[in-house]
Image (cartoon, rainbow, N blue to C red; front, side, top):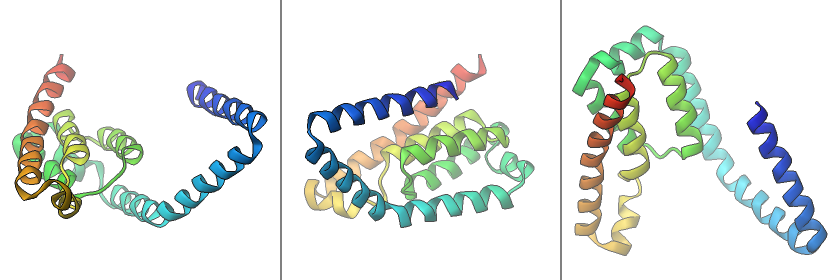
Length: 161
């Protein structure tokens, strides 16, 4: 709570400093930020709604049975596939991971989910192929997918100690 409050205060101070330095630029920047926020809001609200619905409908026992620490590779595979095909921003993914952990998801399963979510881009692959080519896109996604499992195994060992 104190950390969040300090971030809000720091942001307000920097905003006031910016406004004092150049009010017109600050207003223009805030207007651009608001437009960006309006653009992302429908997608953001949809993702929040789906996540909230899923966490409400799935009991801790169900989550633990699907992606708990004892599900091993099967649970890791499930979360890696969900992470690879889902487009969720990090500021939603990390609180979601915390909620999943609280409901019984395993550390390795969460780690592979977050890793694939951040590094593997099934949804964004067509756009990536336009700029980098098919071969580079596939190679990057495959290596990122494999690396996600390596990361999850390391995280699982560290958390287990």
